[in-house]
Length: 151
Image (cartoon, rainbow, N blue to C red; front, side, top):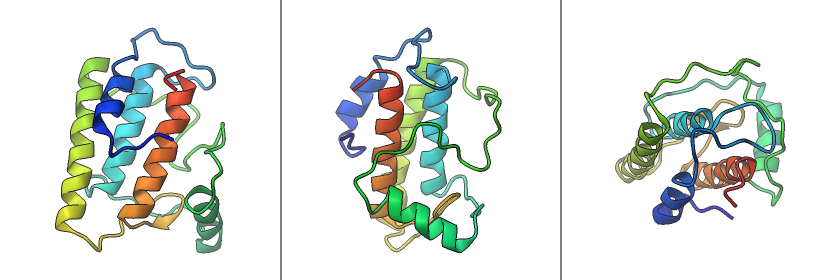
């Protein structure tokens, strides 16, 4: 299992990505995946607050499956705010994208150090505390690391 608290391992895996790395599934490029993971971290570190896109009963069900089960994130699951088209890249290159992702992970730690009881909204599951966000990020990173054969 990927552990976002093991930053050395996260960094090593991310640095295996190359601009021309091909995914096993999906259409995101390596840089798209890194930016995608970055934005998800920013949802949880106070920088990109989100709204809940689903009714509360559906969010509770998704949370039970993603956070409180051993199930992996399913291939093809798409966050409700994403379109079928690839998003425009925000950062100049893959190396910069990786650096920003690692920086946002540090901001995640800082945010919860300063806001211990915070429960930022996940767009599909609603409010999550630090432990729940960590479980989500671990599964999310693992999903995309498998996508690019990093694990």
